[in-house]
Length: 263
Image (cartoon, rainbow, N blue to C red; front, side):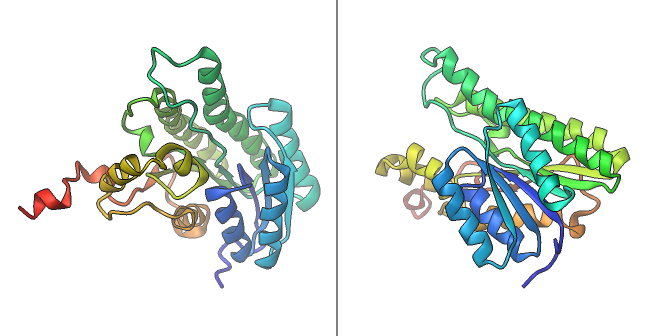
């Protein structure tokens, strides 16, 4: 068992399902004390049970990343429970409505940007405040996406939010560097999560999306979690203001159908 984060204190937002849940479990296996937040209590209890089954010490906090007081409280409760904050994974996010710009509601735009951008900004604000106060540096990973580099029909606001996360990541890295705080991002393509089921469950759409990936499959939450774990550890000590794409080759270029290539 890896102990790269042995006795480090980690905070994960959006840790109740999917990538956040797998990362919480892997952090626990790596020796970290794991605090994670989310808006669904039942799923949070399930994740906490998995963290403890992995041999970790954990804490679940019911919290909405779009609410400043709740984000600040989550950091405070982390410190109250474990004494400090060493690493963070700002993972919480939503896809928003799948609709053209001309049909999207202002309320949906506000909700998507509120969680995906404001939520990361608030998390960075209070995490970095605590890390600077401690004076021992730290590592933070933000959840972006391949949508942080490209556009997508019907998901303009989601794409805009993930582009914004990369901008926040670069700026936070510059500000954190004098304090020994590294800030990076992870940029997955389609991962097998509840979000993927909501967006791409229709068989023709599912098959089309699979075909965009050079590896001809979707990724697993565990594969993203491993990248996050690496970026939070000492092996990535010279990496900041950057990102890792975990995309199955989606960003390498257009993928042609297999039957066409065989002709």
